[in-house]
Length: 530
Image (cartoon, rainbow, N blue to C red; front, side, top):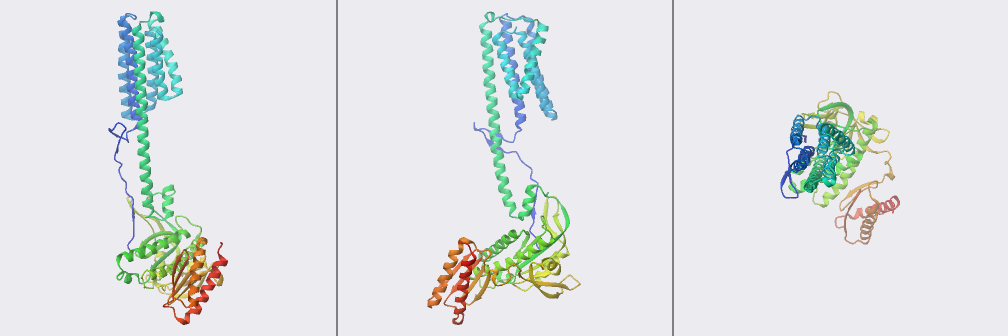
């Protein structure tokens, strides 16, 4: 038995590139946090360069003593040391966020010392305060900013204790010192704006890249869903089930079907016609299986394998009843499909045979960590297949186990025992006739065929908005047949199919056909909502 498998493989993600606004190529999968840390280091260096420039100008202007060159050395050396520490922690991947917060506080303390060294000159001190606190807000928010204020005060106190508390009046502050302070502040504002722009650009590119990946993931999931039953696909993507090798024993109801004579017919039909016909058949059967809650295991040519009871179950009795009800609907749908194919030139009388059994099976993912096949195994699976092989075309055979579960709601008849291949004991089988709730004259299902005439109707599936078209086709056919006029009617709708070719209808069948058309029209009028 050839099986269709879904292959699950692990793909190593490769870095992708995108074109940024300035036309340059950059990696969109670059770590935004690492980029932010690098930018923070650059801003720190600029922050202390401004402090060094202002203090240097003050020393040159002889506003401050030459001994303050030691403070210049400290202010110049600190950013380099801070960068080395940050790089080391990033390389070790250890407490990078905590390290960044500590460095921001050290920045505030040293800037406070620099303010004391500048003798708290108004414009230079204000420029440094704006720079250090703006950096703190950008780096960590309100809490870091409040801590930064405290650090600045501590630094100013330490500086005053070491250098002495001095205040430089505004009128004694050299103009060049004020200009350099304002120029440094302007450079910092420009650099901060560039940093913000850079972060925004990276964020937008990352969002665009993420949206593209999400779109690809959705498209891929849609494609993969076609290889899996809706139940399995849903449980995998919801996280209820993992894609790993695991199996379990469960009581399942197993369904097998195939088209009698399909292999012989496939040698006669053109390939495109055969493909279209098979795809139509499998599509219709899958819709019915999905409607009844069945898990489609696989297609093997024209054969279909479905089971009930995993990954979700309503109980053995409900699962078995749903499976048999599905089989009944499939047989009815096959009559509609057969009439459609006849009009398309496929004259073979295609019929399906169905076997159903209930029992304990091994169900789950079989295979390896990289290649899995979700399926079922066990003796009871084989028995369902044997019942399908023993079934007459157009009929449904179920085992005694299944019959015990469905006999209250499904009309069946005993067919005695059969000898199934691979089983030493005789197997008691039953033929499914109809749902008890639909049995009788009011069941709403009609299927009749004669030369030049065929009608199939399942009133439970006919849609209300098709009522008018159905009544028109019935009235047209009946009117022309009464008058003895030539007519040809072909009408298809959900749950309804009608074919009339008056040139091939036998005279002795005309009155019976007219009676059937009339009764069908009355049934449609009475049972369907306008």
